[in-house]
Image (cartoon, rainbow, N blue to C red; front, side, top):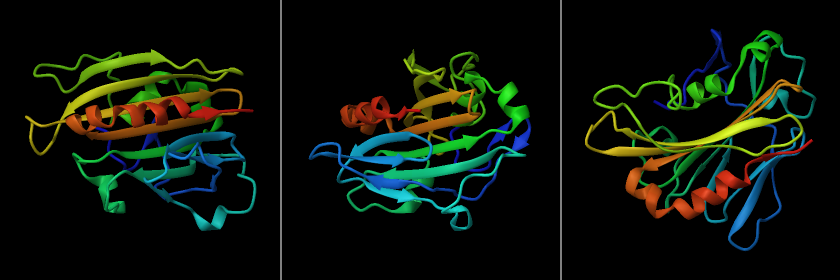
Length: 219
């Protein structure tokens, strides 16, 4: 679950290129700083000591996003809490420090008509919606918490936290904390996922809560 490869909306393959037109700006107090995309009105904060990776598609910088014929990823940021951060940590199956992945998608008209909060959770959690689907026996995941996000201006969303057994070691667990927002009026999907091995998640839950609750879209 929760791999960072190609994504699909209703059978549409997402662009695999890493895309970002964002700005790292401001500071969220002495211990946090904000990461934002002013064009999209989206922002979140991370601890100041964590490494942020802007993953930018250079040929779209400096101009407005075209009207999407296909669904496109238009913003992609990642972060790593390790003392010695490395972009390779983003692909580790069971990271020992929190890593995060934040993306915005501009939806095609057909995808915008069909997308749902359930389909966005399936994207974040590797093909399954842990809220609406049976985890199976033995369980492929455990739901830790689920809550709707109180967004405004027609934006809807939810935050889901699950435990997942590691693919390398079924006795070792990873915790995934995913927040999805959907703006049907603008045709935008906003995804934020933080993950690390389960004890790490418990140890760093305060910081992870700060990140998740700071994830906002304004317009």
